[in-house]
Length: 141
Image 1 (cartoon, helix red, strand yellow):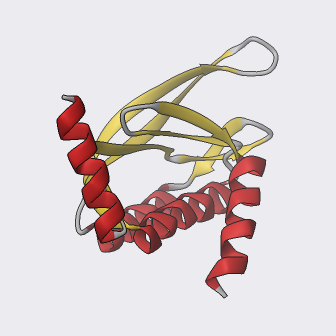
Image 2 (cartoon, helix red, strand yellow):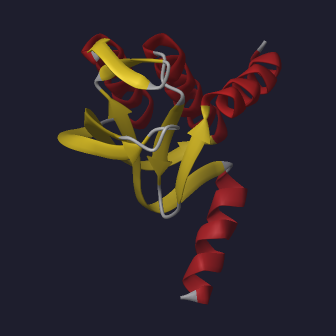
Image 3 (tube, rainbow, N blue to C red):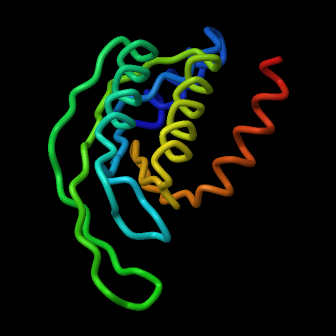
């Protein structure tokens, strides 16, 4: 396994690609968020994100899901989500584009955080994503 891992890493460095042997997943709530609570329909924002992922990664599989979490007051929140999955071997520019698309979705739908997984799982607060995006966007200019 270690040899295989080194081989993948060498290929990544040589080809300037982020080649991961697993699926990327984005958990996108279909309700817009206001004050951390789902309000109104935001399928338009999810559809825009799916369109971006499909264009950048070459395809995506989208399934329905239900997200469950606890709000700041300790109350359960249940909301519909779309799970957007994509297999990827992306160059750094495309990897950055996916990050940008996720940030744009989060901002346009009012999400306070977005769950994204590959082999690890992260829940990234929107301010952190926005800071990342601002830093990257300076480099894109």
